[in-house]
Image 1 (cartoon, rainbow, N blue to C red):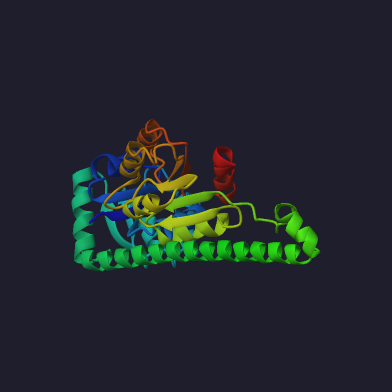
Image 2 (image 1 turned 45 degrees about the horizontal axis):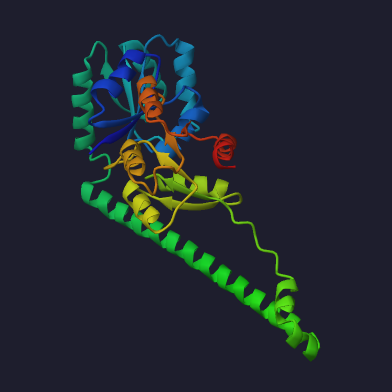
Length: 319
């Protein structure tokens, strides 16, 4: 399995090593030193560990970093420090209850990788594969149930509107004199006022393996758009076999089948190739962004997503 790690710190060389040489075992996301950013990323990304890579931080920087953990203690379970002994010791003295491992420089990327994997495996950090499968199946069933419920509610609304229109037409016809009704039945039907029909909202499909992210996006957009959700590319593609959508919000990093693979399938299918796609990604690495843009989506948004920016991006594409 891949372990999710949230990375921060001024040692860009070590941070880059995680993306370049350790991406086969770690799903990586970077964050800033701001406590709000760290808390948001931890809440949305749900990392198995927070790894801070020290370089040239001052003593005051380290103290402020340690103090910021007071506000995010609920989200942070495993803190791992990488750096020279002095900054690691300053942090550890202030927050020993958080620090689970300290790796001192100089240290190679392979050594970091081996030590982290051994630590995770020894302490059974992360969901067991069998448990993970059960949770994924549960999420898939929940997503399908939500979609079926939405379709049933829409069908019920359409049936009610049709019945109301028919009743109103009958009322208008019956209220006219018999001669007039027989003489101009078509005129009576055509001039009868119809109830105001609601404007059909445009449809958005959100594909993301993070159930919390799906709920956040749906809650933000439900007043403006008809929103369906899917916890995997497989479920999203099955949904598109039965109906269409005006835009797809697609998570770039997903297990089994990532966003890039899903986009390739969408573009290869004549029925879905013209649907606009906006990537959602927590990866702000320059190389990752280049790869993402090269696939020519209609846009991309970095997590944690700002609601105002999300709405503006969608409106600029589909209105």
